[in-house]
Length: 336
Image (cartoon, rainbow, N blue to C red; front, top):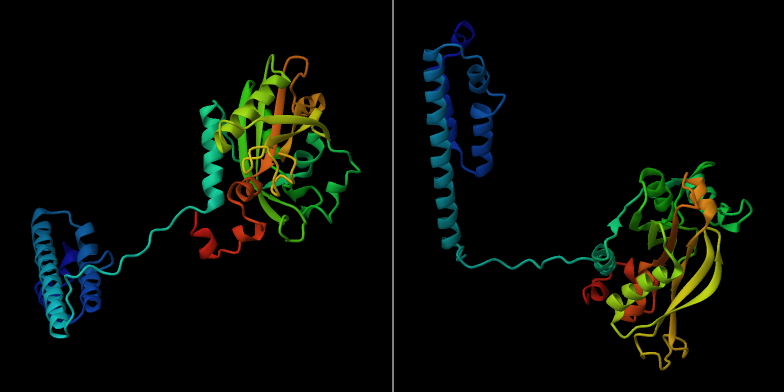
């Protein structure tokens, strides 16, 4: 009780009650509350050191009186403020001006829709780091040492061994190293390349890639997955075709087109009157990629495909310029 006796508690109570009663605004009232009831107040410090019943009764009684006084003064200040507003001709019972609700960005909407489609197919969503090692971004993906994409004029290098990922494919490398097949995942995310911004290019863009690794997988599984995806996204009447291509991390490699969802395949400016729209690249995971992550290509097979989310948004909604997504013009974004 010696440390408690150092404070004249009746005088403390009187001083605190006078300060609360003299408060003329919510700010002054809050300052008084913090001074006399706050965590660093003499009362709060003394309560932490209470060791006997009498001291506890005394101090808790003071605290209860002060808390009641603060609540009463707060009510009184609110009443006075309402009376003052009424005298000034302000009706405080009228609802305030409603604040418009926010909404998801168009690219976020489409990204989530893509994720939902793959989740419905039994895939998992895998989100990796935007910073990758050169090995993850190029070497493990079977990229030729002389490939132009490795150039510092094409790729953002943090140091000689670290880059901002140029694609979401490094996520697949990390996943295959961390997980035991079978693996079915979709990896959406932001990618970076040294591009000059124009209507169809940006140094920052969103990409999504799909990876399936299992026993007994065939190219027919790839075609069926792509077909199911685009029919869900663009309509049940869509058809998909594959064309041979060449990518370092798949063998064989293909590019896939979907029948134009604007003209239904009859031909229009969007599909350049071909009836088909190019959507992305795909293929059979190259055996070297499996070896790089420690998987036996004689035991495991797989396919991968990827496409740009901005491209889907542009085609789906008829936007002519990629930059519209990032300029934050609410007249454009508010339509979605």
